Length: 110
Image 1 (cartoon, rainbow, N blue to C red):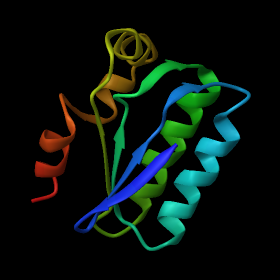
Image 2 (cartoon, rainbow, N blue to C red):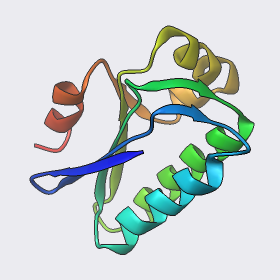
Image 3 (tube, rainbow, N blue to C red):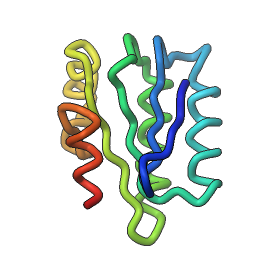
Image 4 (cartoon, rainbow, N blue to C red):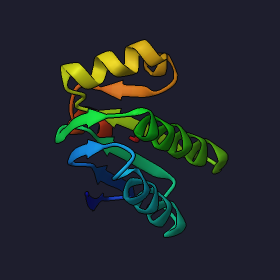
């Protein structure tokens, strides 16, 4: 899991898998980013190969945290085809702002 700041936007880049074994680390990272004062967050999914229901729960909670903040926003980007299919089946494509790549995600905050 990697994190970085791009101006006022915090970028979280999960790698590999978010499943029952790794979801707690993902949740912890998300909490640390929001607890540090971030209100604009991008989840860059370009390095994510698999997401389970535990991972989807973590993404949903991240979205709720962002929406609970004044002006808060969460954008997802660079979903691989298999991840996009999971998001489509779960109905998450309709819930989240999703862009093709990180640059497009960052433009959502301009």
